[in-house]
Length: 161
Image (cartoon, rainbow, N blue to C red; front, side, top):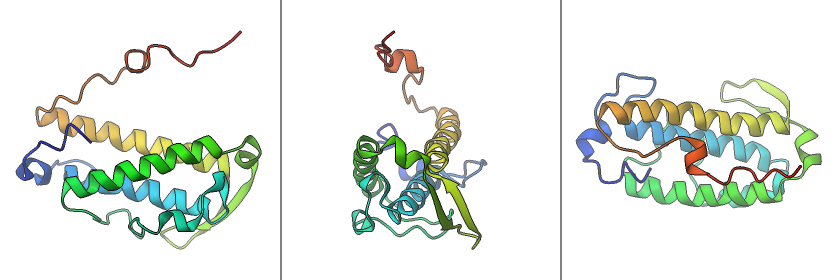
């Protein structure tokens, strides 16, 4: 997000001719995906998430919702949500990942899924749309930095043998 903050509104709102209309729409959709999946987990107190944790966040309804038109406000919300995701991951247990939860999709379908699969979708969804967004940013000439994981996290996972 930080590489987007200095961009002029004209660039943020220009038609991306891609999956989402513009850069602002991508960031709002990423917010939607995280919020809807995390609140589904909070309904079941997974990772010690509670619905009250989401009181200050927008209420996710539809994938195309725009919660923030201004990037600085969206960035503040994103930072708070990222902190909540980190806390959630720190408190999540292996046993919780094996549990099944039920929830209703935005289309009204009742689903039952394993918590681990919902969490995998949370991060795959982010990766998918952030990849699309990096393509849009490249086409706008934005330098968003290196995305190679071995460069970003040179110490790796610290696997012990």
